[in-house]
Image (cartoon, rainbow, N blue to C red; front, side, top):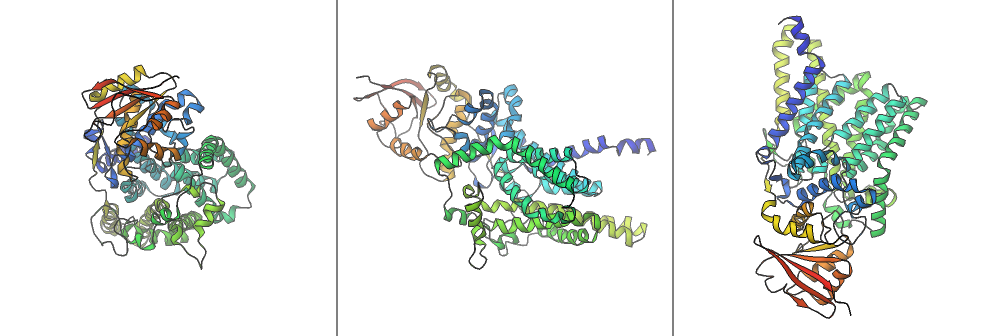
Length: 570
């Protein structure tokens, strides 16, 4: 191989393309066979339900459509009619508006969702690669680190919750912190604000968690705290972040305060980790150590080989002057994330830190899944493991002859790296098929063309229970809503308005009362869309009450009837 060819192969552009191809391939492989059904199916993850994926698909659609209608319309999403500010009842995921061109060009919400999922996985690997390269790790180890981050067990366990998949914003924030720690500047402060802001706009849940970890681990910069440039850069970063996320935080807090959103202590306790949960990993195992002390459904370790490499990385990092601050920062972030993931299970002589957080820190009283701090535990372990793998490479090169290093140490480290990478790998995902829109085109077109402006519809049945899987019916109605665009009385979200369950219980009966029909008519509900079934064959018929008239106006062979609801003027 000539020097010219070697220079081309080793150039940044070629290496960059190679890295993207590797991570793109891994993203497709780890979610296979999703690529074969990318326009018709979604990953259901551990829940084995389409409820959350279809809700997030609806959120992506609303981000592409609602933002064009202005900020007021954006937050008043077409669910839970006539309640206001409903898009702030859950994760806005504002960044997903980048999928607008795909939806507009292909008209496929499902394809846009799946491309966003693959893009997030690819970027997780790519930003890990960039972070490790910025740290000074060689290319092959950085590629390994990116692959390990892309295959992170907790990400693939929670893959149906698509807003948790993008870790690249967190990684970008850490990259900028690494740069600021070395050479603070206004430009890097601006980049820090952008990185954190995009993290929050991708997933406000993880953005909230990250903010606390940054504050808790900031003291590791103690040697640099007397540098005014550092404080200036951080102040600029905070200012830029506030500009980016301020409107979102305002609406989230407004919704929480107006509706008194809080999680029950029992729910938070159930969704908090226990220390033993970190002794096992979820996924398929190259080497299975069993669940050890972990609960059956709560296996939060990234893998024992990675933990072993991370331990080596901590020792090596603390010994190496240039990496000492970074290693301390990663170690502190990991320890804080571990302790916080325990939630109310962490009891320090009668003091429960989690309840103190919920009392004094805005946003934490709305957190339900406290165990998701484990994302940060696994991320830091992977980064420290890459550091450990590179440290072992440097030590072998320094302590052995060139021949021994090339023919013994390198192959041994390669095997160790592959074992650590694939000791836990994703299980074959379960796919859920989305409704066939063409089959429902008739009634969808009728609703779209005949509903008066500023009016809404009610879709029946409502969810029968309160479990996530029970709301699959509701998210199907929401999916249909992305095609007709008419507001629904129905809805699914992280929180629900109080009146929702009253309306649900009043309509999920053998025959709806005049009172509930009048209530719907008073709030400008024009149509009732009813899925035909044996249970409801006599529930909805042409009916005339003293105050309202229910008139059958459309029947679709797919099994949907439409009734017009009118007030009777006296």
